[in-house]
Amino acid sequence: MGGARRAGWVAAGLVLGAGACYCIYRLARGQRPGSQKLRLRSSRSAEDLTNGSYDDVLNAEQLQKLLYLLESTEDPVIIERALVTLGNNAAFSTNQVIIRELGGIPIVGSKINDPNYSIKEKALNALSNLSVNVENQIKIKVYVSQVCEDVLSGPLNSPVQLAGLRLLTNMTVTNDHQHLLSHYITDLFQLLLAGNGSTKVDSSFLSLYDGHVAKEILLRVLTLFQNINNCFKKEGHVAKPAFTKGSLFFHLYGEECAQKMRALVNHPDVDVKEKVTIIPKF
Image (tube, rainbow, N blue to C red):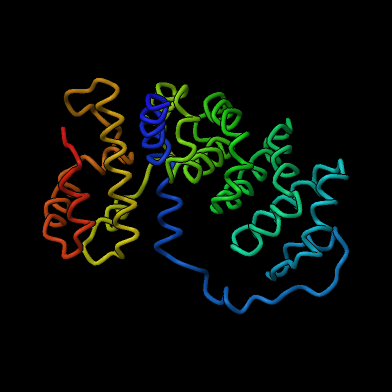
C-alpha cells in the first residue's frame, strides 16, 4: 500500500495542476455577495425546484423531491436542470450532508454514465461540490476510476474533461483517496502537458503566491507546486521541460514565480516558510 500511496501523491499533483486554479480561485474570492441572505424556498413542485430564475436554498424536504425527480424521470432536459439545481445547492455544507443522508450521492453518481455529455458534465459538477465534504468522499470514491477514464478519453479541454478534473482535484486534496489514481499517472501527465485553452491560466494566478495572501490559500498553492515538482521528478525529468506559453507549468516555472518564492522564504508564518524551503527545483 505504501507504494500505492506514494504513487497517489504523484497523481494528486497532476490533478491539482489542472483543477486547483478553479478551486483556489473560489476559495480566494469567497462567497458570492449576498449569499448569507439566501432564503429557504416555500413549498414547490419538484419540477418547479429546477427553475433557475431565482436563487434560494432548498431545504431537506425539497431536496428529497428533487432527488426523486432525478431518479424517476427520463426527460433529459429535466435531468439536466435537476442536476444543476442539486449542484448549486451542494455548494452549501449543510446540504452536502443532507443530500448524502437522503441517499442522493448514488443517484447523482449514476448520471455520469449517461451518454448525453451535457448530463454527464452536470453530474460531475454536482459530485464535485458534494466531494468537498470528507464523509461524502467515502461514497464518491467508487466513481474515481470511471472519472479518470472519462477524463482521459474525452475531447481535450471539453466541459466533461474539465468537470472531471475538478472532481478529481477535490478527491485528492487529502491523502485518503490519492492511491486510487495511481494507475493513471502517466496518462494524466501527458494530458496536462497537451492541454491548452481552458486548461491554461492567466498570469494573475501567481498573485496567490504573494505574501499577503491568507495562510490557508498560500499553503494550498505551495502544495500544488510541490506536488507538480514531485511529478516531474517521478517522470524522470532532470531538467525543466519546455512548457506551452500560458499553461500552469509555464507560470509556475517562470522568473516571476521564482521571485515570489524567494520572497516567501522570509514569510512570518513558520508553516509557509517551511513549505517554501522544502519545494525542490529543477
